Amino acid sequence: MGMLKLLRAELRKYLLEVKTYYPDQIVDMVVKYILFATFFYGFVYHARNSTAYCIAYMYWIIAACVISELSMSVSSEKQIGTIEQLIIKPYPLWLILTVKTYIVLLVTVLKGVILFGVIRITLPITLVFNINLLWILLVSVIGFTGIGLALSGLTMKFAKTASFESIISYALLFFSGTIIPFDKIPVTVQRILSVIPFTAGIDASQKLLTGNSQTPYVLLWLLLMNLACFVIGYLVFNAFFRNVKTNGVLNNY
Amino acid sequence: MNMYRITELRKSYGKKADLVLKGLSFDVDKGEILGVLGVNGAGKTTLIKLLLQALEASGGKIEFIGNDLSKISLRKYYKEVSAVLEGNRNVYWYLTGLQNIEYFGRLKQLEDSEIGEKSEKLLKAFDLYDARNQIAGNYSRGMLQKLSIIIAMLDNPQVLFLDEPTLGLDIITKKAVMQSLKHLAKEEETTIVITSHQLDVIDAITDRVLVLENGGIAYIGRTAEFKQLYSENKYKLTVNGTVDRKDIVFSDYVLEEKEATTDIILNGISKRDVSLVLSHLLERDYEMIAFSKDSNRLEDIMEMFIQRGRNGDA
Image (cartoon, rainbow over all chains, first blue to last red; front, side, top):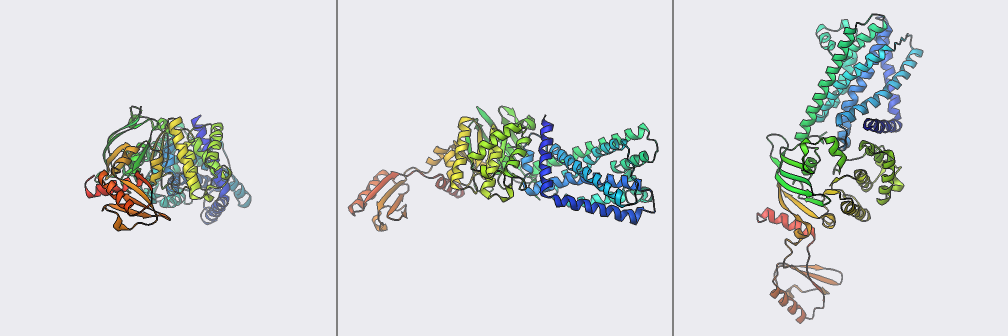
């Protein structure tokens, strides 16, 4: 019941926010369309199949949403001056931020569906969908949440962290196989990226859609990797949270 | 019954930093209104945030209803306490007053029906009902403050922390807030810890005051007793018209000229000298209107208290 109340509270608040700042949502969709089209014609069109690109792009939208929303939330609540009101509520702060982020993610996915609908109509792309893709995506979201929590913990302590969020977000776009094929990325970067949930999720999804079979071992590895990422992120968040409660920098921004 | 028992509470911001609070020990009773006073930087807000667990103490112990607060689940604790924190916005500007109440009410795990019922009552009591559907960003400072207080009072908390709650409020609203707080403490047995530089508010509603000075407790006791600290041998004499200073046969006095009358405040005067001053004025045909042993305003007492502390004789 408690979780339902939190969900309702955050859903209603976010829908009101969307209603108030609806031009932001339209601009966001237009920018994502332009980015997609630019990279599609600039890097992808003649290089590899469009399905792989679509999958990677969809992953990027979701990862960027979860990771950035978590750290930007902390930053904006600090600036607004409401973060301490959130801290003194019966729900832990990380849970409030995560639920809020998932609500934003839900709206982002809806926007993504519209976006890919427009893409399909306007660009020479064949979109393939497989229901099993959702499971891989959901598992990946757990890992993205871990990265986002770690970053929001950092933002609590160092308010300027949120300013670097867009760099992280676009780095994911370029170096995860979305824009540049994974095998064209330097080997060292490949090694780093292979242990983050983002790349592994894209890889598993692309294999699924191209008909390559997924061994249970790969899926289990994906789940474990994402769970580990979440646990590490949660621990980092709590370590920073405790640190700011000790050093009293929660109001600094 | 003790709501809080604080023992040797210390706080510094960082391991090498100076202590902001230097071993405070005091109790807060259930249903009492405790005023926390002190100059800027005395540690009032730090103390409130420590009691709220929004900050972690550097040492000492806080007990809440007999239990070590560091061992109580914060989930349970935050169902029992609410706060209005000074300098923070406390509400979202893009939501209306009512939407803010609903959002924070749900975060407090209240049912929607409960939120509706209580918010209507509080919005009417604080004269904000007609503005409930306005965006909070369009509210005046006073209206925002009222909204923050309504949100804090929504779930009938056992403990209410208020950091400068009446800042920016008009006289009527200030009185309404004071009445509501007194009602909460008396009827609902809510414990209220309040800081305010508006000492008339502290004077009017608190049972006890805690004066912080340089991170320590300079005074803790009943507000009425605190007011008596420096009021011994202080008299106020009101006479018609103006007074020639040569006619006052006493050195430590203050003249306050009003429209048609003059107040003569005699500080630290003995009964014998009071008689002398009175008879001297009567001999010179001054018309006496009032004569009383003066009761200090809390503001005057605080000023004297801080001054004596600075002179090292507190």
